[in-house]
Image (cartoon, rainbow, N blue to C red; front, side, top):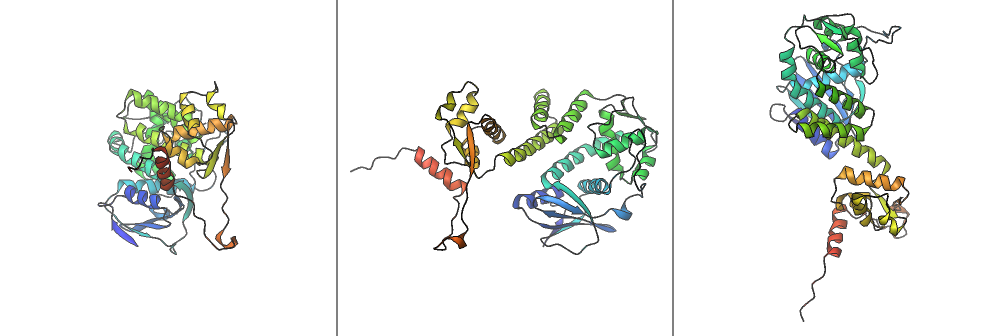
Length: 369
């Protein structure tokens, strides 16, 4: 069991440590009056405590009108928003146990730890500005004439649906069962996109915020190349925007994870035609990767050996695969028990393979006689 104080080890640091070592278990945050917990397994948050009495009682049951507007949030959405709120409180104590505790029934969720941490840190960075902007909870919100709900998350659609009734922020928070930070960060997202107005705040959306919103939608729809292109352009215009940096890292991380679904790290890459390097369909970067394919190295070794960034190397391998210039062969190793001598077969580690590669590439010095 690991215990500590969030003021000395932040929730983000602890979750990143859990993610890096692939630990499974239960993470508990002891707050005044209640305990918030989440179960982690296989680098995912799979279950969390039910906010229950801690959240305001919102409406129950399906609430969708003929126009397709929705007015209720799912328990999963409310539970995740409640978890994100924990990033704003660093005065609590925590416990992490690598066992499954017998706790009250929770709510099943499914979100990668890395994604959860990146979003939580973004909300933490933005909260001081948002808190200062929305001084009065009695301010009314109103939807703009843009009624298109496509591309919005469930919580954004619900907030926008309610905005057509022009409620106050306080009334809407009670109706949805959300905390003040959870509601305001979603209201601010929609305000910057030009989808709603709030009394006492600037009118209209911000162009940069609209671009970020559009790229975020692309990211959610798994259009990683397009999302990364937008984020790269925004960073080129202003490299100091921390929100864009975080979203760019998130887009690249998800893209890499998606590419490995097609290109397993342990798959040996075999070149069909040695003359493929001269193909006019390849650019210089493509040829650099082709030059390293020797029929022995798998995807993970080629990624490490390439001078290009991981995502770029994987994209090139995907391109070569789509052009049928290469094929992937998965190594099959017989279990130790099925071998006559009972010997175990161990796959060479990445570091040993690279060490051998370096050794082979370095000319041997002649011994002095």
